[in-house]
View 1 (cartoon, helix red, strand yellow):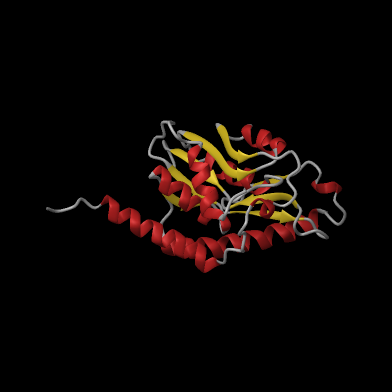
View 2 (cartoon, rainbow, N blue to C red):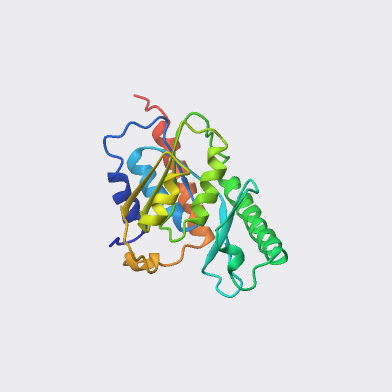
Length: 221
């Protein structure tokens, strides 16, 4: 169990002890992932930024991800997506448009706080506060892989083992603290899993960037 998202990020950082990382960059999937990512980045002395991806929702069960779309417009569809009741080309087009609009809204918010980080040639860790189907993480990995990181790592506090195995095919490695055979809900692995709102995610990124810039300024005697 994790006390909260910050505790999850700190526990996740323990999996990286002794690993050599090149100019490490933690990319968090908003909104909850930003809190987890900040704690992880702080422990690794890494830069923190966001990567934007949104799940494509099933028509009658919006919590079920039938795919996801990334900030570059790339799309991932689960194998079962078109077998779900109500899913057709028209539905997918409408859902995709809605999620891309939300991505653009979030892009404007986060880029007002921090310009996009350089990706190429770096150890890039994509993180969230937990995953179930892995659809959103897959979309995020596809976005970042195209930008040529030195290595691409998916890191989450909790994931089913089959999802972690799927992710492994789309990145260099997967780091996960807990891999329960039956996941249930991600929130079930946290004592505190209150929803993270836009302002909290923005403030977390803003404070982390400010503190990092202060650390990078040489002290004058």
